[in-house]
Image (cartoon, rainbow, N blue to C red; front, side, top):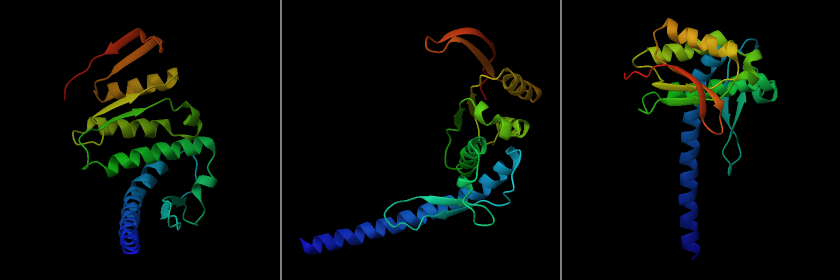
Length: 188
């Protein structure tokens, strides 16, 4: 029994070491995309670099996110800036996984809580260009908002590039009652 426990511990330690290496590579791969996107869509920031560091704890995974001076970014961001950071992380993973997935359909729910901290034109342009490009990281994109201004901007940007879309306005979300729908789906 003692030999079996020792063997199991060695195997577990080997798996944990491999897992830590994979997590480190994953974080290092997403980091460059994250900074590029974050720096484009955030309105105001002093962050010049984003670094991922795997936590030193042995049994639990995790990472710290620091700026160029080693400050923990997540402790210094406002709620709106944190929302922009998380959207940037979401998009960074899209770019990182470009070659890993054929299912490039994404959903973003209302972002009005972080609009004050976000450069909306840049954010929508990232989406627009990725939808427009044949080899972009997005094949289909679902976006919901309660902001009429954001809705109009989104529609304008999609129309200006000839990107097909459907705009659906609901009377009742819980019942799925549609007030209005326009646009058309097109196969690519």
